[in-house]
Image 1 (cartoon, rainbow over the protein chains, first blue to last red):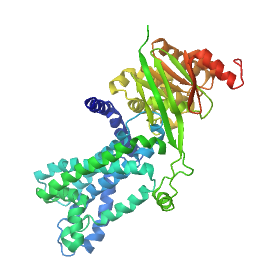
Image 2 (tube, each protein chain N blue to C red; image 1 turned 60 degrees about the vertical axis):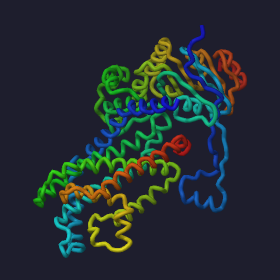
Image 3 (cartoon, helix red, strand yellow; image 1 turned 135 degrees about the horizontal axis):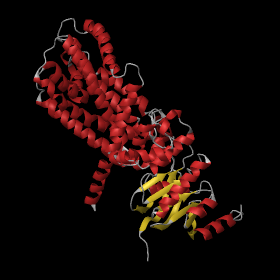
Image 4 (tube, chains in turn red, cyan; image 1 turned 90 degrees about the vertical axis):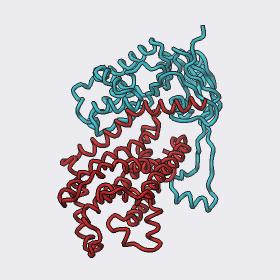
Length: 266
Length: 251
């Protein structure tokens, strides 16, 4: 009996992969079709923000020159963090945003959440074009480590799916989660070394950033591959993997437990 | 010979929380929690309803507004889970609960056909094979590549109906969707439904129009305030229902 259930689940998942594909394609199409510059925006936007941040923060934080090639350092970190915030934000709204559909047709609900994180991932890969431009422009060293970046993407994807699942189900019952999460991500951004370096921090705050902030594990790994050209510490790598799996499992369990009640609240 | 059972509704009860005030944010929740005002007010939309539908039968669900007919359909379509009891269905289900649910108004008709097909769980290959058939039936060939937000509601309904009925489903669930569209299209829809019925499709039909229930269905179940009042042959149930409403068949 239990076997059967698992089998049905897997069959349903396969049946609805087509829907997931369609939803991701829709998100991307609509994002890029609506604007005149289309795909260019996903490169221009991070570039412009980076320019401003480099202009301001390179004076503020980097007088001593402790961070070499500040522009690449900054944009690499931001690429990862942007993915985390946009994909989880979109995932959070995925269930209530599709309320009208979920009330009328049976569709496995997780498809919507997964598709949002997947669109986010594709967008992140697109926006790595901006990273490449900056790297070429600043004559950075390319090493073979760069090619390892998908290792971080897998962990990031699982982590964001888990967080997205949790937020999506919570948001069905409590709509103000959106505002709380918005404040939360702002705080989260500041305790992630995006525009400063971890070496500039001391004491308990450094401990919090280095050990308790999941984003640090991913930003650090990504920078290792594309910026420093090295392999990450074992602690960072293993820690990142564990966090992503734990996040995924917890998120999925919360989602599974409450999904039958969604219909009464949307 | 007894035909195969397609839908088995077994002592189904569906429960809603009919709270006096809807709490959907943490702030209210916390305040109510402190004041000890969190209540769960139970409302049973359906109580202990059982019926079985056999292959090839057409069942009409009749009853006044708010009696639980649509809830029943939603539970059978898998959108809602029963609180007690079980619902078992066999075979593919095509739900026509609202036409064009899942259309994205910014996408073109061509893209929406594929998207809607995927929502209903059809494969890409299947959709490609039947693409022309859908377009022909909906009669929208000239507007294929314009965004659907420019469509009239009748055109959208036509498209939704053609996508949903392109399969030969084992079970067809219809909830008063055919009230939109012009007479010509209504006729086409009815023809298509009769065609499906002739192909051994099982039909579940909700309508206030007793005439069309009598025309399309073989059996009926009368639901009132969540209870199944009567079930059986369509003529008998409809007659009793009309009597109870103080109407005659001619009305």
